[in-house]
Image 1 (tube, rainbow, N blue to C red):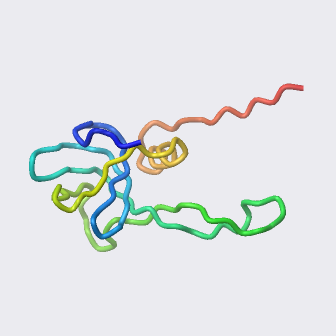
Image 2 (image 1 turned 60 degrees about the vertical axis):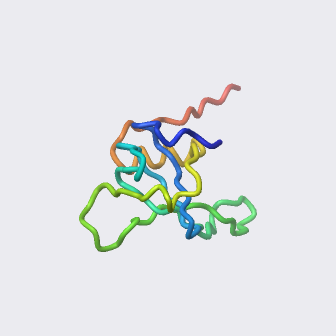
Length: 112
């Protein structure tokens, strides 16, 4: 789902013209840029243990947006943004947990 890029405070997935995608919390938006807190790049990762049959599947991992930067936020020129989207619930919850936002418990109730 594509969301309004002016949704300050929302956790969003941003796709750049380069094809890179990252997740972060929108801090500020103006005509020239989008400011995002704690940007983490989405990286496809092989997950060996995800299947009961032991077959590998592809999952998503988070890696730093920049390996050498001290910054906890980044300003992205809007000319380089192709889309701002709402993340899947699992991705949003994992991001919130990693960055210290509210931890959202997944209900695991089984009825006999």
